[in-house]
Image (cartoon, rainbow, N blue to C red):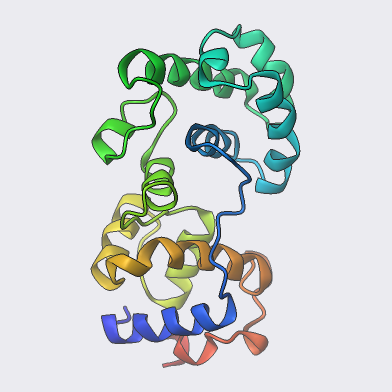
Amino acid sequence: MLNKKQALKIIKILEDTYPLAQCTLSYEKDYELLFATRLAAQCTDERVNRITPAFFSAFPTLEAIAQADVSRVEEYIRPCGFYHSKAKDIVAAAKMLVSEYSGRVPDTMEELLKLPGVGRKTANLILGDVFGKPAVVVDTHCIRLSNRMGLSDTKDPAKIEAQLKDKLPPDKSSDFCHRIVLHGRAVCSARKPDCENCPVNAVCEKNL
């Protein structure tokens, strides 16, 4: 695998190529990002962004979501797929946030993982984007690209998270994960990576 010095080179290239490191899910409130991330499981961010405006308009507060019938939530999120389980998790998480966290999204991994439907990927996204804490979001793009580049050597998300934490500066880890998503969509796609036009090509492990 690549070492920390080589990882820093990749970070610099991605920073230059994608100066705006932003989450591609649209949201205004912290809990909206939490629920949008749940909806994005096995669904594109683009589709989620088309659905959430109407959903959050129909249920404009966390309390409104907590009090909603799961069947009503399902009507709004159906196009995201797996809408039965997603609606159930969202309503249950909203109830828990209201009853146990005074309507605030918690800012620790331990507490976030207690929320229904929240795994480490979602928790890390919240920690990084909402609270500005060091975080490594391991999604499908991160799994694919970290292995291709030589930053990891496993498909196990928890192990990839640990390997990247060992190589990435904490203050750059969250933005790196956003940039890796942008790079995965623009250049290093799953079906046909455009290696000839990839700015990271010379630093990829396969070319060293």
